[in-house]
Length: 500
Image 1 (cartoon, one colour):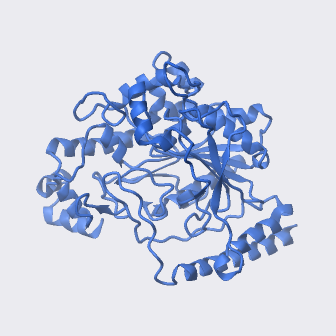
Image 2: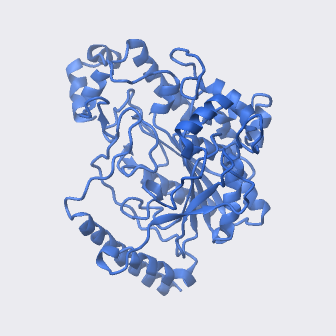
Image 3: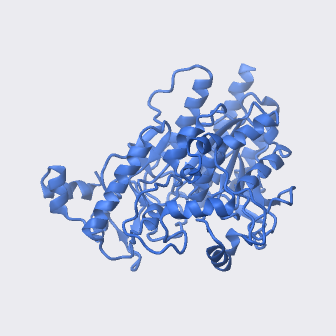
């Protein structure tokens, strides 16, 4: 068996190296095509220029030698630029078998699936997209963002990017997993469990959709899984915090005790802080976060983790904020969660009424932005596994450039790989690997002080801005900041220019 594993490892190594070479040729050798830029909320982010090597991942074939040749075939097909057969990377749309669990408008809920035969790892991703909290703004959302409330016009296929990509060069650790994308069509931060009524006009079934997807997947190979990673961004990231233990409990109750359930929450760690200035509560963007969640949880019939509900009985809205719900996730099912959070999250600044519309910010706004970074650091300091760059952005794990951002020299895919290894070592009573950090948070004090942050572009001109231009655009006072840091202004400017 040892000899077989050695041969299989060598064969996988050859295939992986050939695949990387072939992919480089396909993308244009030394001058590859640039990655697609994400759509901008206020600024647009592009990839950086850093690169990193990764150890090969053999989890898919470990202790599963009967499926080894199937996995080799998949790898061989992935070399399609050099072969006659093209591998289909798209995820296919499936509607839930339980038709009583629906989107807001009563249309069937569903999911996209790309199977990776031979792999015992599954990644289920929860899409984000804000929410609505009463009949009026849900009606408005239905008119302007119907795809987030209805499945009537969902495409039949979807191509995964970032951590959902099947390309090893874009997704070095999870590329060979079974990929599942659950579209967000419940508008309830994945918390609702309420059927459509005449009074509400809509169904809110986010938590039930997750449960039904997991049940359906058990008939498609999830029953043989070794690891299930429940991931999500923005509202989906909050949804991970609200549902990861429920998923573990569901599988436990169905007799699937061997599946290790984990969570990956991206840009879903919101604060219930006081807004920079108060406005009329019209929609989820203009209202204070606490107010919208208080109204929403009643309207949705929202469900929160039981331990958190007991801690905040009568004020269950607290459980929608990461630093309040996170302690309750340490349940008997012990679902580990990795938190990814920009220290200067654009969505947080938006709900706090800091409008970055191209005009230099006022001194009070600048102090508010800096304090936001401090507050986020304080709430994250006791989270064992986390990645928090000092950047102004929102969402990252499904972006093509997600491998480029680093904290203290470690990229996010590398940190996730270290986290995976540390969890395996804990189960095997081994010491954690050295030089493999999992708690990574920037210490520099202002937005984009990390040189690997996504590129900022001026909202109106579209021109890229370097760190100094961006900070000046934000109303940055070099003299005052240098004084606060106890250094000469020219030295501070030199540090900023070099990206220190």
